[in-house]
Length: 192
Image 1 (cartoon, rainbow, N blue to C red):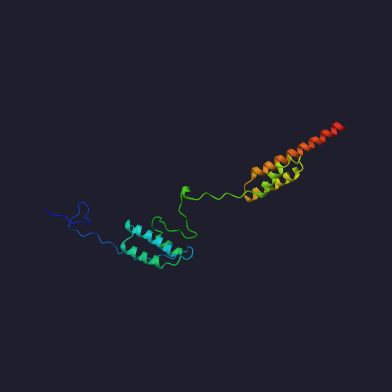
Image 2: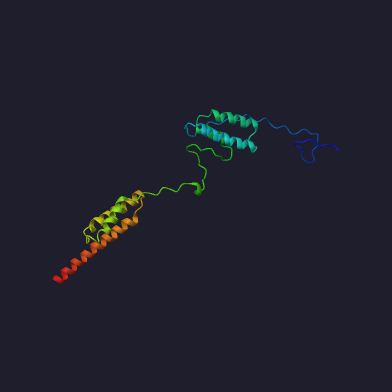
C-alpha cells in the first residue's frame, strides 16, 4: 500500500499523478488613490491598521505577499485615507474610520448617554414668576404670562427643554389675571 503524501490531494476521480491546473499569477496589490480625508495619521492609527492586516493574514484572507505589501504600505502611509485603502476589502476591524466614511454601528450599550438639551432660562423665570403670583396676590401675573409665551416660542425654535415650566408660569399667571378680573367685576356689580 502506497503512503499518500501530506498536502493538497487531487479531486476525487482525478489521476493521482496529474498536475494541478495552473493559477494565473496575481498582480501585486497596490493601494488605490483615495478621495478620503487628508487628515494626517498617527503611529497608533498605523498600528490599528497593521492589527487588522495581521488578523486578515491569520484568517487566510491575505497571501503572504499581499500581507507584506500592505504591512509596508501601512507604515509608510501619511493620511487616514491611505490607511483606509489598505483595509477596505477586509472585514471591519479596530481601525478608526477616516472622516467622511461610513462609521460602524456601535451598540447603544457602549455609547455614552446623549447630552440633554439645556433648559430654557426664560421658562424657569416664567415658572418662578407664576409661583410668586400667590404670595404677591397676582402682582407678577402679567410678567409670568409674558415670560411663559416668550419661553414657549424659544423652546420651539431652539429645541430646548422647559415646556412644562413655561406652561406652569402661564397657568399661574392667567389664573391670577382671571381671579383679579373676576374680583373687579364682582366689586362693580355689587357696588353699582
